[in-house]
Amino acid sequence: MSSTDALRETVKNLTETFNDPQRRETSYFDFYDESLRIYGFPPHLSDDKEGLKQFIYLLWNAFPDIKITFEDVIIEGNKVAGRYRLEGTHKGKFLDLLPTNKQFKVNGTTIFYFQDSKCIKRWNLVDMISLIDQLRIQP
View 1 (cartoon, rainbow, N blue to C red):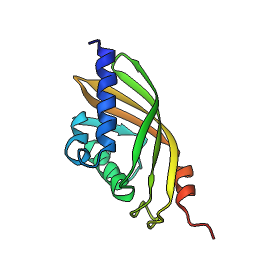
View 2: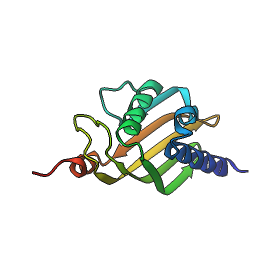
View 3: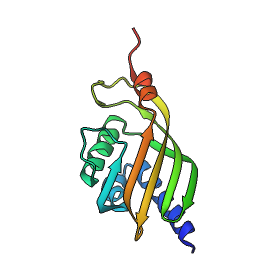
View 4: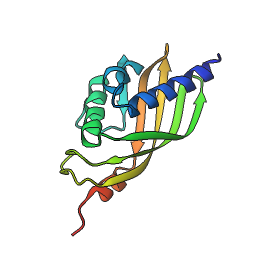
């Protein structure tokens, strides 16, 4: 198996784990190295693995049925770039928004940088304006 195939398989497994409520809490963070640095996540979080955990748990608690689907995956060297769709239902508090039971779909992009099969850096950009817009209660 080439390193490209191995990285593609890793991202596939990472995605499946994120989407599976039975596996995600015990396995999702295993894909990330303890030295992880994150970029593009909310500024009040630390830029390490603990900050990533806080943000991901916020998502899982607010949107228990959340699902990520990668539309495009590009691999070069140890970097994996992906364009994704995130969707779910607002069942728990998210930032300052109380649950609305509204469904959402937003787009995002992420870049993973792997070393020894673990992600050591992750850059993320998601359409938060669209997400908040979809969750707001209209007057």
